[in-house]
Amino acid sequence: MNSIAQNVEATSGVTGGPSARAMLAEMVHGKTALGGGQLFWRAVLCNMLVCLGVWMFTRARGDAAKIFVLWLPVAVFVAVGFEHCVANMALFGLAILDGSASLRDLFRNLMFTVPGNIVGGGLLVGAVYWFTGGSRREGGIFASE
Image 1: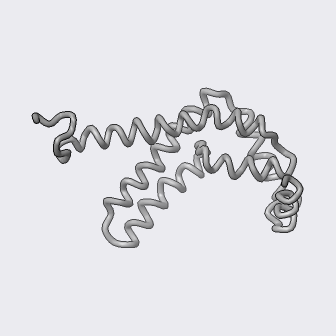
Image 2: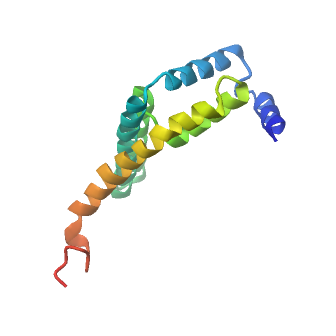
């Protein structure tokens, strides 16, 4: 199976050129050099932006507004270098096929970014949104019977 995946990666040209391979190796090296705390907090901030983008998307009216409010937070997290576990799975997956990373590197990264993404999106955005929207809940935990 691994040789099939490597064949697909090689023939697709994703990392076909030396500059693409160098960029991939540099990005992965930068992510593997970060400490656990840095990965965690970058993941918290990342998923805060992503979830805020999705939340704003659901609130926006008009297609142009929806595109803008979804695109902007994602562009910011990419430009700043925050960590998203799904994006890292794709990046490390390519790097593993290319030989510039290992499964150990991927699992170490995910060990800190998955909890960080959960805290950033689930607690700091989702739970706050749920709590502040309490007046809209019928029969919720704050309702008086």
